[in-house]
Image (cartoon, rainbow, N blue to C red; front, side, top):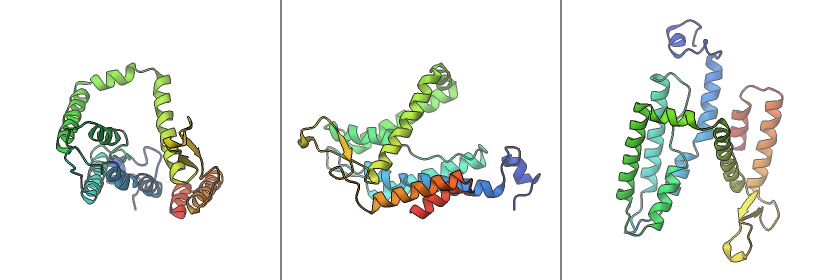
Length: 221
């Protein structure tokens, strides 16, 4: 157990931040289950062929995604001493996949090289403090809007996977890109599990049960 005042407690500043070992463990599990989807989703997004017909191996991309997430999260905890999990996001990978698919002559090695250059550029901006200056210059209202937009995008992904929302094909001749359920009806096990998990999680949160979100995720899974 992590005793108050011990070397580990002082190093990670657990008690200082008003937390304890059990709370940190629950938070770690909840974060893992909430983020683990990226190990499957990232290789799915990057599975398209380039102009030469070459594809990235699903297993290889999944392994690299898991390795990078694990390594960076460990470094953030052990070196940065913050309980933040780091992994690949849904922005760059989608941009890369669309760029490769829509630009003849562009190959996966070319795109990976551009990603490396992008990372090095971001590193320079961070080290010089320019990134922080730009971030501070952005109005608070715009920052809030960005966070809300990302949250709505993630919520839309969940609703689509649960069967609540489905994309309407272009051939349908409608200006509405999505519709409710399947032909206007909510059917299927994914939808039922989603509703059950959502109601269970809300009930546990309202009753202030410890690990409510974690219990909801595990039960639904």
